[in-house]
Image 1 (tube, rainbow, N blue to C red):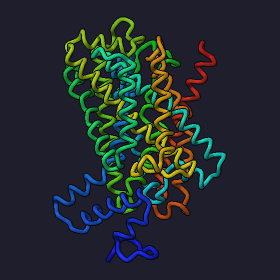
Image 2: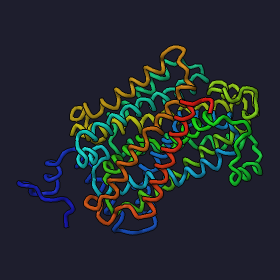
Image 3: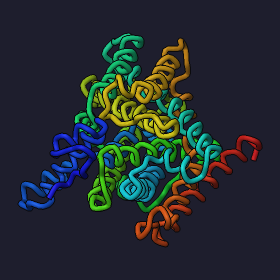
Image 4: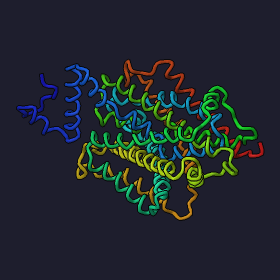
Amino acid sequence: MSVIPELHGASSEAEVLQQLPEDVRERIKDRWRIYQLRHHPSWWRRLTLFLSLIGPGILVMIADNDAGGVITYAQTGAMYGIGFFVPFLLLMIPVAYVVQEMTVRLGAVTHRGHAEMIWGRYGAFWGVFSLLDLTVANILTLVTEFIGIRVGMSVFSVPPILSVAVAWIFLAGTMIFLHYNTWERLALWIAAGNIVFVPLAIAAHPDWGQVIAAVGNWHIPVGTAVGAFTYVILANLGTTIAPWMLFFQQSSVVDKGLTVNDIPSGQADTAFGSLSMGIIAIAIVILTGTLAYGHLNAAQFDIQAILHLLRESSLGSVGTALFALGLVESGLIAAIAITASTSWAVGEALKLPRSLNLRPQRALPFYLSGILSAGMAALVVLIPQIPLGFLNLTVQVIASIFMPAAMLFLLMLLNDREIMGSYVNRRWQNYSAFTIVGFLILANAVYGYTVVFPSA
Protein backbone atom coordinates (compact mmCIF):
# COMPACT_ATOMS: atom_id res chain seq x y z
CA MET A 1 0.00 0.00 0.00
CA SER A 2 1.37 3.43 -0.97
CA VAL A 3 2.24 5.94 1.74
CA ILE A 4 2.04 8.79 -0.79
CA PRO A 5 -1.40 10.33 -1.41
CA GLU A 6 -2.85 10.24 -4.92
CA LEU A 7 -2.98 13.47 -6.88
CA HIS A 8 -5.16 14.30 -9.86
CA GLY A 9 -3.81 12.98 -13.12
CA ALA A 10 -0.98 10.99 -11.55
CA SER A 11 -0.64 7.34 -12.52
CA SER A 12 2.37 6.44 -10.38
CA GLU A 13 4.08 7.40 -7.15
CA ALA A 14 6.91 8.96 -9.15
CA GLU A 15 4.45 11.28 -10.90
CA VAL A 16 2.84 12.12 -7.56
CA LEU A 17 6.23 13.10 -6.13
CA GLN A 18 6.94 15.37 -9.10
CA GLN A 19 3.70 17.28 -8.48
CA LEU A 20 4.61 18.03 -4.86
CA PRO A 21 6.74 20.98 -3.70
CA GLU A 22 10.45 20.27 -3.48
CA ASP A 23 10.65 20.48 0.32
CA VAL A 24 7.67 18.11 0.69
CA ARG A 25 9.31 15.61 -1.68
CA GLU A 26 12.49 15.57 0.36
CA ARG A 27 10.55 15.17 3.60
CA ILE A 28 8.51 12.27 2.17
CA LYS A 29 11.71 10.49 1.15
CA ASP A 30 13.05 10.88 4.69
CA ARG A 31 9.78 9.68 6.23
CA TRP A 32 9.68 6.65 3.91
CA ARG A 33 13.17 5.70 5.10
CA ILE A 34 12.02 6.07 8.73
CA TYR A 35 8.90 3.99 7.96
CA GLN A 36 11.03 1.16 6.57
CA LEU A 37 13.40 1.21 9.54
CA ARG A 38 10.52 1.18 12.01
CA HIS A 39 8.62 -1.69 10.37
CA HIS A 40 11.55 -4.02 9.66
CA PRO A 41 13.04 -4.38 13.17
CA SER A 42 16.55 -5.59 13.83
CA TRP A 43 19.15 -4.27 16.25
CA TRP A 44 21.01 -2.55 13.42
CA ARG A 45 17.85 -0.95 12.03
CA ARG A 46 16.78 0.18 15.50
CA LEU A 47 20.15 1.86 15.99
CA THR A 48 19.94 3.43 12.54
CA LEU A 49 16.39 4.59 13.31
CA PHE A 50 17.49 6.27 16.54
CA LEU A 51 20.45 7.96 14.84
CA SER A 52 18.13 9.15 12.05
CA LEU A 53 15.65 10.69 14.49
CA ILE A 54 18.10 12.51 16.76
CA GLY A 55 19.38 15.92 15.86
CA PRO A 56 17.24 18.91 16.90
CA GLY A 57 17.58 18.25 20.65
CA ILE A 58 21.34 17.72 20.64
CA LEU A 59 21.89 20.63 18.26
CA VAL A 60 19.83 23.13 20.26
CA MET A 61 21.52 22.17 23.52
CA ILE A 62 25.11 22.07 22.25
CA ALA A 63 24.50 25.30 20.34
CA ASP A 64 23.26 26.67 23.67
CA ASN A 65 26.85 26.20 24.89
CA ASP A 66 27.69 28.87 22.36
CA ALA A 67 30.68 31.20 22.29
CA GLY A 68 28.79 33.64 24.49
CA GLY A 69 28.03 30.80 26.88
CA VAL A 70 31.65 29.61 26.95
CA ILE A 71 32.84 33.15 27.69
CA THR A 72 30.13 33.61 30.34
CA TYR A 73 30.98 30.30 32.06
CA ALA A 74 34.69 31.12 31.91
CA GLN A 75 34.15 34.57 33.43
CA THR A 76 31.79 33.07 36.04
CA GLY A 77 34.42 30.57 37.20
CA ALA A 78 37.08 33.29 37.33
CA MET A 79 34.84 35.66 39.31
CA TYR A 80 33.10 33.30 41.76
CA GLY A 81 34.86 29.93 41.62
CA ILE A 82 32.92 26.68 41.68
CA GLY A 83 31.04 26.98 44.98
CA PHE A 84 27.71 28.33 43.74
CA PHE A 85 27.69 27.82 40.00
CA VAL A 86 28.47 24.10 39.82
CA PRO A 87 25.18 23.18 41.57
CA PHE A 88 23.41 26.04 39.80
CA LEU A 89 24.38 24.66 36.38
CA LEU A 90 23.40 21.15 37.48
CA LEU A 91 19.95 22.57 38.18
CA MET A 92 19.90 24.10 34.70
CA ILE A 93 19.98 20.64 33.08
CA PRO A 94 16.35 19.74 33.98
CA VAL A 95 15.33 23.38 33.46
CA ALA A 96 16.59 23.30 29.86
CA TYR A 97 14.94 19.91 29.28
CA VAL A 98 11.53 20.99 30.61
CA VAL A 99 11.51 24.05 28.35
CA GLN A 100 12.76 22.41 25.16
CA GLU A 101 10.75 19.18 25.46
CA MET A 102 7.60 21.25 25.01
CA THR A 103 8.79 22.42 21.59
CA VAL A 104 9.25 18.78 20.50
CA ARG A 105 5.63 17.92 21.27
CA LEU A 106 4.31 21.16 19.79
CA GLY A 107 6.21 20.72 16.52
CA ALA A 108 5.45 17.01 16.16
CA VAL A 109 1.71 17.46 16.84
CA THR A 110 1.04 20.62 14.82
CA HIS A 111 3.69 20.36 12.05
CA ARG A 112 3.98 24.13 12.38
CA GLY A 113 6.85 26.32 13.51
CA HIS A 114 6.72 28.44 16.65
CA ALA A 115 6.29 31.79 14.88
CA GLU A 116 3.56 30.37 12.65
CA MET A 117 1.67 29.04 15.68
CA ILE A 118 1.79 32.42 17.49
CA TRP A 119 0.65 34.35 14.42
CA GLY A 120 -2.13 31.88 13.66
CA ARG A 121 -3.40 31.54 17.23
CA TYR A 122 -2.95 35.01 18.74
CA GLY A 123 -3.00 37.35 15.75
CA ALA A 124 -0.70 39.81 14.04
CA PHE A 125 0.00 42.07 17.04
CA TRP A 126 1.44 39.31 19.21
CA GLY A 127 3.00 37.74 16.14
CA VAL A 128 4.93 40.94 15.39
CA PHE A 129 5.83 41.29 19.09
CA SER A 130 7.27 37.77 19.27
CA LEU A 131 9.09 38.13 15.94
CA LEU A 132 10.72 41.43 16.95
CA ASP A 133 11.61 39.93 20.34
CA LEU A 134 13.29 37.00 18.61
CA THR A 135 15.02 38.97 15.85
CA VAL A 136 16.59 41.54 18.20
CA ALA A 137 17.68 38.83 20.65
CA ASN A 138 19.11 36.73 17.80
CA ILE A 139 21.17 39.56 16.31
CA LEU A 140 22.55 40.41 19.76
CA THR A 141 23.34 36.75 20.45
CA LEU A 142 25.02 36.38 17.06
CA VAL A 143 27.30 39.25 18.08
CA THR A 144 28.60 37.04 20.91
CA GLU A 145 29.16 34.14 18.51
CA PHE A 146 31.34 36.25 16.25
CA ILE A 147 33.13 37.60 19.34
CA GLY A 148 34.04 34.01 20.21
CA ILE A 149 35.19 33.26 16.67
CA ARG A 150 37.24 36.46 16.51
CA VAL A 151 38.89 35.94 19.91
CA GLY A 152 39.48 32.21 19.36
CA MET A 153 41.12 32.70 15.98
CA SER A 154 43.26 35.58 17.32
CA VAL A 155 45.14 32.93 19.33
CA PHE A 156 46.36 31.64 15.95
CA SER A 157 47.16 35.19 14.76
CA VAL A 158 44.26 35.26 12.28
CA PRO A 159 43.12 38.87 11.59
CA PRO A 160 39.56 39.60 12.86
CA ILE A 161 38.22 40.62 9.47
CA LEU A 162 39.35 37.31 7.95
CA SER A 163 38.05 35.04 10.73
CA VAL A 164 34.67 36.81 10.95
CA ALA A 165 34.21 37.00 7.17
CA VAL A 166 35.08 33.32 6.57
CA ALA A 167 32.74 32.24 9.39
CA TRP A 168 29.87 34.29 7.90
CA ILE A 169 30.46 32.88 4.40
CA PHE A 170 30.56 29.34 5.82
CA LEU A 171 27.27 29.57 7.69
CA ALA A 172 25.60 31.25 4.68
CA GLY A 173 26.81 28.43 2.45
CA THR A 174 25.55 25.69 4.76
CA MET A 175 22.07 27.22 4.78
CA ILE A 176 21.78 27.93 1.08
CA PHE A 177 23.37 24.85 -0.47
CA LEU A 178 22.69 21.94 1.91
CA HIS A 179 19.44 20.02 2.29
CA TYR A 180 18.12 19.67 5.83
CA ASN A 181 19.49 16.19 6.49
CA THR A 182 23.01 17.04 5.30
CA TRP A 183 22.90 20.39 7.10
CA GLU A 184 21.90 18.66 10.35
CA ARG A 185 24.61 15.96 10.10
CA LEU A 186 27.30 18.56 9.38
CA ALA A 187 26.11 20.64 12.33
CA LEU A 188 26.23 17.59 14.61
CA TRP A 189 29.83 16.89 13.61
CA ILE A 190 30.77 20.49 14.38
CA ALA A 191 28.87 20.28 17.70
CA ALA A 192 30.95 17.24 18.71
CA GLY A 193 33.92 19.57 19.11
CA ASN A 194 32.26 21.05 22.22
CA ILE A 195 33.51 18.05 24.21
CA VAL A 196 37.06 19.52 24.18
CA PHE A 197 36.32 21.49 27.37
CA VAL A 198 35.90 18.31 29.44
CA PRO A 199 39.49 17.00 29.09
CA LEU A 200 40.75 20.56 29.58
CA ALA A 201 38.90 20.74 32.91
CA ILE A 202 40.40 17.40 33.95
CA ALA A 203 43.88 18.57 32.89
CA ALA A 204 43.51 21.61 35.20
CA HIS A 205 43.70 19.14 38.14
CA PRO A 206 40.82 20.56 40.19
CA ASP A 207 40.17 19.50 43.77
CA TRP A 208 37.43 16.96 43.05
CA GLY A 209 36.52 16.76 46.71
CA GLN A 210 35.81 20.49 46.62
CA VAL A 211 33.77 20.07 43.43
CA ILE A 212 31.63 17.34 45.01
CA ALA A 213 31.22 19.37 48.22
CA ALA A 214 30.08 22.39 46.19
CA VAL A 215 27.03 20.46 44.95
CA GLY A 216 25.50 20.51 48.42
CA ASN A 217 26.86 23.83 49.68
CA TRP A 218 25.81 26.48 47.12
CA HIS A 219 28.59 28.63 48.57
CA ILE A 220 28.56 32.34 47.71
CA PRO A 221 31.91 34.11 48.29
CA VAL A 222 31.95 36.51 51.24
CA GLY A 223 31.49 40.17 50.30
CA THR A 224 29.73 39.40 47.00
CA ALA A 225 27.77 42.40 45.69
CA VAL A 226 24.12 41.48 45.12
CA GLY A 227 23.78 43.47 41.90
CA ALA A 228 26.89 42.03 40.23
CA PHE A 229 26.06 38.50 41.42
CA THR A 230 22.47 38.72 40.14
CA TYR A 231 23.82 40.06 36.84
CA VAL A 232 26.01 36.96 36.45
CA ILE A 233 23.12 34.65 37.43
CA LEU A 234 20.99 36.28 34.73
CA ALA A 235 23.83 35.90 32.23
CA ASN A 236 24.05 32.17 33.02
CA LEU A 237 20.28 31.83 32.73
CA GLY A 238 20.35 33.69 29.42
CA THR A 239 22.88 31.29 28.00
CA THR A 240 20.98 28.22 29.29
CA ILE A 241 17.49 29.07 28.00
CA ALA A 242 16.96 31.68 25.30
CA PRO A 243 14.10 32.63 22.91
CA TRP A 244 15.94 31.41 19.80
CA MET A 245 16.04 27.89 21.22
CA LEU A 246 12.22 27.62 21.24
CA PHE A 247 11.91 28.77 17.64
CA PHE A 248 14.87 26.71 16.43
CA GLN A 249 13.93 23.34 17.88
CA GLN A 250 10.25 23.50 16.95
CA SER A 251 10.98 24.57 13.36
CA SER A 252 13.77 21.98 13.15
CA VAL A 253 11.35 19.26 14.27
CA VAL A 254 8.93 20.39 11.55
CA ASP A 255 11.56 20.64 8.80
CA LYS A 256 12.90 17.23 9.78
CA GLY A 257 9.36 15.87 9.46
CA LEU A 258 8.95 14.32 12.92
CA THR A 259 5.47 13.06 13.86
CA VAL A 260 3.77 12.09 17.12
CA ASN A 261 5.28 8.61 16.74
CA ASP A 262 8.71 10.23 17.00
CA ILE A 263 8.03 12.18 20.21
CA PRO A 264 9.77 9.61 22.50
CA SER A 265 12.89 9.78 20.31
CA GLY A 266 12.69 13.59 20.32
CA GLN A 267 12.46 13.56 24.11
CA ALA A 268 15.48 11.25 24.39
CA ASP A 269 17.35 13.48 21.93
CA THR A 270 16.57 16.55 24.07
CA ALA A 271 17.46 14.77 27.34
CA PHE A 272 20.85 13.68 25.98
CA GLY A 273 21.48 17.18 24.67
CA SER A 274 20.54 18.75 28.02
CA LEU A 275 22.89 16.45 29.91
CA SER A 276 25.73 17.16 27.47
CA MET A 277 25.14 20.89 27.74
CA GLY A 278 25.27 20.79 31.54
CA ILE A 279 28.41 18.65 31.74
CA ILE A 280 30.31 20.90 29.34
CA ALA A 281 29.15 24.11 31.05
CA ILE A 282 30.23 22.77 34.46
CA ALA A 283 33.58 21.69 32.99
CA ILE A 284 34.28 25.27 31.86
CA VAL A 285 33.40 26.70 35.29
CA ILE A 286 35.62 24.09 36.96
CA LEU A 287 38.46 24.90 34.54
CA THR A 288 38.54 28.64 35.19
CA GLY A 289 37.38 28.27 38.80
CA THR A 290 40.51 26.18 39.37
CA LEU A 291 43.03 28.22 37.38
CA ALA A 292 41.71 31.81 37.52
CA TYR A 293 39.61 32.23 40.69
CA GLY A 294 41.52 33.97 43.45
CA HIS A 295 43.95 35.75 41.14
CA LEU A 296 44.35 39.49 41.50
CA ASN A 297 41.62 41.30 39.52
CA ALA A 298 40.03 37.99 38.49
CA ALA A 299 36.61 39.62 38.76
CA GLN A 300 37.60 41.95 35.89
CA PHE A 301 39.03 39.23 33.66
CA ASP A 302 37.72 39.29 30.10
CA ILE A 303 38.16 36.34 27.76
CA GLN A 304 41.53 37.62 26.47
CA ALA A 305 42.85 37.80 30.04
CA ILE A 306 41.56 34.29 30.72
CA LEU A 307 43.29 32.94 27.60
CA HIS A 308 46.54 34.60 28.71
CA LEU A 309 46.19 33.02 32.15
CA LEU A 310 45.57 29.59 30.61
CA ARG A 311 48.74 29.93 28.54
CA GLU A 312 50.72 30.73 31.68
CA SER A 313 49.15 27.82 33.59
CA SER A 314 49.88 24.09 33.47
CA LEU A 315 47.77 23.82 30.31
CA GLY A 316 50.36 25.77 28.36
CA SER A 317 50.08 26.76 24.72
CA VAL A 318 48.53 23.43 23.64
CA GLY A 319 45.72 23.68 26.18
CA THR A 320 45.14 27.32 25.27
CA ALA A 321 44.96 26.42 21.57
CA LEU A 322 42.40 23.68 22.32
CA PHE A 323 40.33 26.12 24.39
CA ALA A 324 40.48 28.64 21.53
CA LEU A 325 39.36 25.99 19.03
CA GLY A 326 36.47 25.09 21.34
CA LEU A 327 35.53 28.76 21.49
CA VAL A 328 35.52 28.98 17.68
CA GLU A 329 33.50 25.76 17.39
CA SER A 330 30.97 27.01 19.95
CA GLY A 331 30.48 30.24 18.05
CA LEU A 332 30.18 28.50 14.71
CA ILE A 333 27.62 25.86 15.72
CA ALA A 334 25.50 28.45 17.54
CA ALA A 335 25.67 30.87 14.60
CA ILE A 336 24.44 28.09 12.31
CA ALA A 337 21.49 27.31 14.62
CA ILE A 338 20.54 30.91 15.44
CA THR A 339 20.70 32.01 11.80
CA ALA A 340 18.38 29.14 10.88
CA SER A 341 15.96 30.06 13.69
CA THR A 342 15.72 33.63 12.35
CA SER A 343 15.07 32.41 8.81
CA TRP A 344 12.43 29.93 9.92
CA ALA A 345 10.64 32.50 12.10
CA VAL A 346 10.63 35.22 9.42
CA GLY A 347 9.56 32.70 6.78
CA GLU A 348 6.69 31.48 8.95
CA ALA A 349 5.55 35.01 9.81
CA LEU A 350 5.63 36.27 6.21
CA LYS A 351 4.29 32.97 4.78
CA LEU A 352 7.37 32.50 2.59
CA PRO A 353 8.47 29.11 1.21
CA ARG A 354 10.58 27.97 4.16
CA SER A 355 12.66 24.85 4.37
CA LEU A 356 16.33 24.01 4.21
CA ASN A 357 15.30 21.50 1.55
CA LEU A 358 14.46 24.34 -0.87
CA ARG A 359 16.78 25.58 -3.57
CA PRO A 360 17.90 29.21 -3.16
CA GLN A 361 16.21 30.39 -6.36
CA ARG A 362 12.84 29.34 -4.88
CA ALA A 363 13.36 30.57 -1.31
CA LEU A 364 16.03 33.27 -1.40
CA PRO A 365 14.06 35.69 0.88
CA PHE A 366 13.79 32.87 3.45
CA TYR A 367 17.55 32.35 3.47
CA LEU A 368 18.44 36.04 3.31
CA SER A 369 16.61 37.04 6.51
CA GLY A 370 18.91 34.90 8.65
CA ILE A 371 22.06 35.49 6.63
CA LEU A 372 21.68 39.29 6.66
CA SER A 373 21.02 39.34 10.41
CA ALA A 374 24.24 37.35 10.88
CA GLY A 375 26.03 39.85 8.64
CA MET A 376 24.85 42.73 10.84
CA ALA A 377 26.20 40.97 13.94
CA ALA A 378 29.51 40.27 12.21
CA LEU A 379 29.95 43.96 11.37
CA VAL A 380 29.36 44.96 15.01
CA VAL A 381 32.18 42.68 16.15
CA LEU A 382 34.61 44.39 13.76
CA ILE A 383 34.09 47.81 15.38
CA PRO A 384 37.51 48.90 16.76
CA GLN A 385 37.94 48.95 20.56
CA ILE A 386 34.50 47.43 21.22
CA PRO A 387 34.32 46.07 24.83
CA LEU A 388 33.91 42.37 24.02
CA GLY A 389 33.62 40.98 27.56
CA PHE A 390 31.05 43.53 28.76
CA LEU A 391 29.08 43.17 25.54
CA ASN A 392 28.96 39.39 25.89
CA LEU A 393 27.59 39.36 29.46
CA THR A 394 25.08 42.12 28.61
CA VAL A 395 23.70 40.12 25.67
CA GLN A 396 23.14 37.08 27.90
CA VAL A 397 21.28 39.25 30.43
CA ILE A 398 19.07 40.69 27.66
CA ALA A 399 18.26 37.14 26.52
CA SER A 400 17.08 36.24 30.02
CA ILE A 401 14.91 39.39 30.12
CA PHE A 402 13.24 38.43 26.82
CA MET A 403 12.67 34.82 27.89
CA PRO A 404 9.56 35.11 30.14
CA ALA A 405 7.40 36.49 27.30
CA ALA A 406 8.55 33.70 24.96
CA MET A 407 7.87 31.10 27.65
CA LEU A 408 4.33 32.37 28.26
CA PHE A 409 3.44 31.99 24.57
CA LEU A 410 4.84 28.46 24.63
CA LEU A 411 2.85 27.55 27.75
CA MET A 412 -0.41 28.89 26.34
CA LEU A 413 0.05 26.80 23.19
CA LEU A 414 0.98 23.66 25.16
CA ASN A 415 -2.19 24.00 27.28
CA ASP A 416 -4.50 24.54 24.30
CA ARG A 417 -6.33 21.21 24.00
CA GLU A 418 -7.80 22.19 20.64
CA ILE A 419 -4.26 22.29 19.25
CA MET A 420 -2.51 19.62 21.30
CA GLY A 421 -5.27 17.09 22.03
CA SER A 422 -3.94 14.43 24.39
CA TYR A 423 -0.43 15.88 24.15
CA VAL A 424 -1.21 18.95 26.29
CA ASN A 425 1.04 19.69 29.23
CA ARG A 426 0.60 17.59 32.33
CA ARG A 427 0.20 19.29 35.67
CA TRP A 428 3.81 18.74 36.75
CA GLN A 429 5.05 20.19 33.47
CA ASN A 430 3.01 23.35 34.02
CA TYR A 431 4.19 23.67 37.62
CA SER A 432 7.81 23.27 36.50
CA ALA A 433 7.48 25.73 33.63
CA PHE A 434 5.71 28.41 35.70
CA THR A 435 8.36 28.03 38.41
CA ILE A 436 11.04 28.72 35.78
CA VAL A 437 9.14 31.79 34.51
CA GLY A 438 8.66 33.01 38.08
CA PHE A 439 12.37 32.67 38.86
CA LEU A 440 13.29 34.55 35.68
CA ILE A 441 10.94 37.40 36.58
CA LEU A 442 12.20 37.49 40.18
CA ALA A 443 15.86 37.54 39.14
CA ASN A 444 15.15 40.32 36.64
CA ALA A 445 13.29 42.29 39.31
CA VAL A 446 16.16 41.93 41.81
CA TYR A 447 18.68 43.05 39.22
CA GLY A 448 16.48 46.00 38.21
CA TYR A 449 16.16 47.02 41.85
CA THR A 450 19.95 46.97 42.38
CA VAL A 451 20.41 49.11 39.24
CA VAL A 452 17.87 51.73 40.41
CA PHE A 453 19.02 51.62 44.03
CA PRO A 454 22.73 50.69 43.88
CA SER A 455 23.33 51.69 47.51
CA ALA A 456 20.84 49.02 48.63
